[in-house]
Image (cartoon, rainbow, N blue to C red; front, side, top):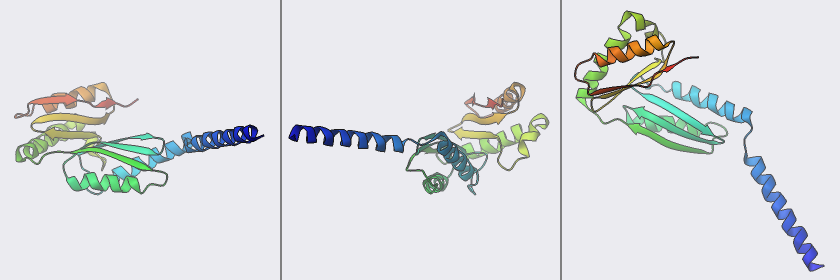
Length: 177
């Protein structure tokens, strides 16, 4: 009799654990809502600029923030707004704060002019949130974001490579589908 009661108790405990694990898995709709809200909150950050790159990954109720920013306050602002999103349980902040450098600041301005000031690429200068992100770290440049076609991607890379004083250019632009 005691063994039967123990077996029933163990079965109930196992079933209860399995149900609680199953309930912890978010639905696809919940994940999509969190993704949408994270994107919205990040692009609404007041000091997010063309020289900052923020990206994220949503894994269930957990959000990982990645990218590079020029201001330490932007890193903490991003983490704080994402933490407040309903359903987000954990934020893993892997955003890199770029080191302050007057040389890099000058390169950023020259790169901005070379890319956004070039007539075939001026259409990308129109939105408030610029689709081509210019990341400069110790003279090394990374272009991040989305462009309309492979020609624009190549053109942005060529324009960036034409700016003097740059050690390397990595063209990570993605062509929209």
